[in-house]
Image (cartoon, rainbow, N blue to C red; front, side, top):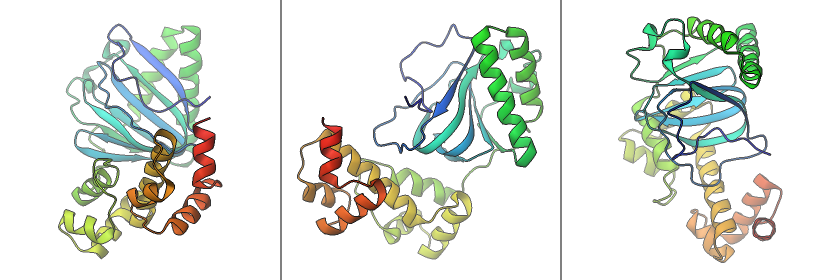
Length: 266
């Protein structure tokens, strides 16, 4: 069973002091709406494999292996995209910490990367937090959180350039048509080449790659939730040629659009 990286939007976490769970979306790409959530606790996501794209405080944060994202309490956030992601998600109240003063005035997310041996250590630390949470070992949880936060540098958030935020928000907006690089560059007010460089530099993926991800996610949603003919689904995701759409879909999923619909609709 997959454990998604997002939280239940209307669940009551006000009485919780510490929560952690293992995240596992292996082999799964987000293909449905993920609600915006806001926790009364300080949230965190740590990725050990794959990637998770989080929108928070008006910015986009791409979390890849070794990345931790700390989200301020009561700050609305949403998972825009995830694929093949494993790691840990959770939240804690400042009262759990020995010294909560460093986070008292935290108002923006903190996004930090841990590389090589340090990343391995952080992964083990989160795993020990999970095991201690299961055992109810509050003493270890307190000490481990203090150790975690001692390794995080306040104010070191990796914030995407404005053009990257505009593009990522637009390409995953299900209320609008999927465009091409020219339309997204025009919306951001920059050249196609500059947008391509910005997207590649920040996300490690091309503009076309993100467009294909958004196109596939929308096609999966339409095929699994509606009875639209395949030719109309193709048009809805910006591919007028049904044959090309079928090849694109099968190359990405290993299934034809019709076979995928049959599997999803039972």
